[in-house]
Image (cartoon, rainbow, N blue to C red; front, side):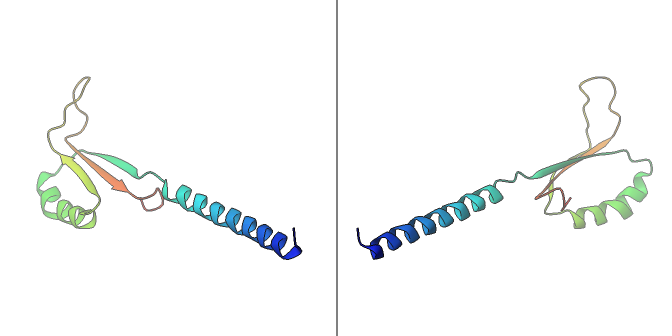
Length: 95
């Protein structure tokens, strides 16, 4: 086999390995699952909650809020809270 062909084959193998490694790294970087936060809220002053807190909270998390509920059901005993919200974030750092 001529020397030029050997260099071409060797360079092709190195380039292929580098591209494969980059592709695998890209796939692993995209495989991070989202983070979910569950907030249990006990409202002691409903008027202040509705007028002050709720509008600010809704504006800040409008795109991240998955669910919010007022009728909390407990599987055991009385529920400890009267409101629950579930949020989804891209990473723990963003949470």
